Length: 79
Image 1 (cartoon, rainbow, N blue to C red):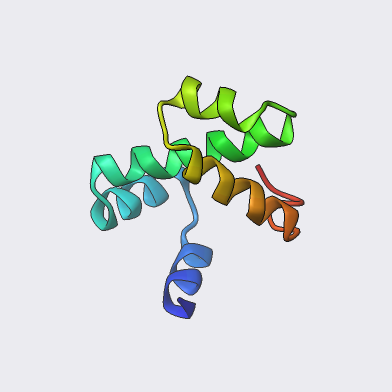
Image 2 (spheres, helix red, strand yellow):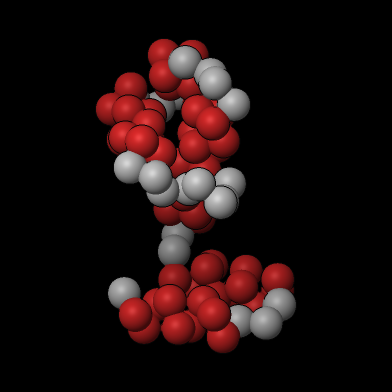
């Protein structure tokens, strides 16, 4: 994980980041990551888990996982 963090910190532009992520992940995986970010944003705005699951067409367990991570204090300064 430290290698990934160090590489991410070394990337200096949006285009470099895009190229790196497209090289590392499939489009499907990138879409999944984007969906997880949407889940966190929607939870932080107060949307219900059921609404989010229906709106984003994801399983309730995926939304619940995001909720639990927020409760642990993650994403406090992000998303």
